[in-house]
Length: 309
Length: 205
Image (cartoon, rainbow over all chains, first blue to last red; front, top):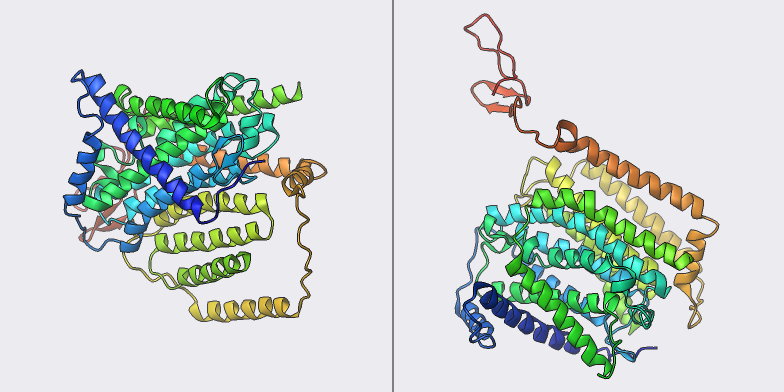
C-alpha cells in the first residue's frame, strides 16, 4: 500500500516537482540545441533563467475581442492537468502523491482534457493563425488519444490493476519496455502530441507563425510554455512508471531510480525536437489511423495473449 | 470534507449547466456543458463509483471535443466566437424544462434514499468488470464493435481522400457562388451565361 500526501501538501509537492521538471526540460532543450548545432553548450544552466526574465519583462499582447476567460484559464487548465498527472506517479514502493485506484483512467481523462486546453487556448484569441492551429490540433489529438489508451490498458493487464503502484510492482521481474516493446514508442507519440513538442509541434508550429501561441507574449506566454514543459515532465514520469519499471533497479534508492529514468526519458523526448523534422499534420493523421493504431492494437492483443498463457 | 466537496461540485454543475443556455457561442456552450459533466463525474467519484466517475470524465471530454468541431462546422459562424442567438422555441423549451425540473425534484423530495456506505476495501472496480465482461459480455461487445464499425464507416465515407483517392486534387470541383449580382448557386454549379445559347456546365475550373 502506498502512502498518500496530505490534502494540503499534495498541490505544493506536485507544483514543486513540476517547476523543477520544467527547468530541467529548458536546460535539456538548450543543451540539445547546442549539441546538434555544434555551437557547444555554454550557459546551459543560466539561459533558461534569462529567457524567463525576458518574457516577464515583455509586454503581453492583446487581440481584438478575445474570449478573455478562456484565454487566461487555458494555460491554468494545462498546468493543472500536469499536476493531476504527476500526482498519480509512484516515487517509491511506499510513496505517491495520490495513488488512486483508477490511475490509468485518470491519465486517459488528462490526455483528453489536454486537447480541450489546447483548443481553447487557440480558439479564444479570436485570431486567424491560432484558430487554424486549434482546429488542426483537435484532428491530431483525436488520432493519438486512442493509441495511448491502448498501450496504457495493455500495461494494466499484467498488473491486473488500473493503479499505478500495482503496475510498477508487476514489473519487478521484467520491465514493460521489454515485455510490451511497442508500448513506450507509442506512448512517446502521445507525449509529443499532448505537449505539441518537436516532430509533433502541430499546435504551435512555425508554419502557422506560432499557431496557438502566435498572439501570446510576455507573462501569459511564459505560463503557457511552463505548463507545456510541466506536461512533458508528467508524461516522462508516467512513461517511467508504466514502461521503465518505475522504482525498480539495483543499489540506488527507489526515488533516485525514478528521477534518473524520468530525466533520461525527458532527454530523449526533448532531443527529438532537434533531431527529427516536424511531420505534416495531414500525413500524421493518416499514419496514426493506418499504421500506429493497428500497432497499438497489436500491443494490446499481445498483452492479452501473454496474460492467457 | 466530502460534504463540502459535494456541495462545491453540485453547485458548479448546476451553474455551468445554467450558463450553457445563457451564452451566445457554440464553443462556450459546449465547454460549459463539459464543465457541468465533469462536476457530475466528480460527484460520482464521491459516491464511490471509482471507475464510472473517471470514465465519465474522459468520455465526456472526448465527446464534447468532437461535438464542438461538428457544431461549429454546421453553423454559419466558422470561429464560434461571434455572438449568435442559440435559442429556438424558447417558450416550449421553458415549459418542458420547468416540468422536467418539477418532476425530478418531486421524485428526489419524495424518495427514501438508502444510506448504505460502501464497506471499506470493497473491490468495486473488479465487480464492475465482472459484471460488464461476465454475463453481459456478449451484449457489450456487440454494441461496442457495432459502434466502432459505424464510426470508422462514417469517417471513411465522408473523407475526401477515401472517396476520391490518395492524390485527389481540386480538379473539376467548383466552389459555391456567393455573388450578390448573380445570386447564390450550390457548389459545383455555374450560372448559365445569358448571352450565348450553349449552357456551360461545371466541369472545368
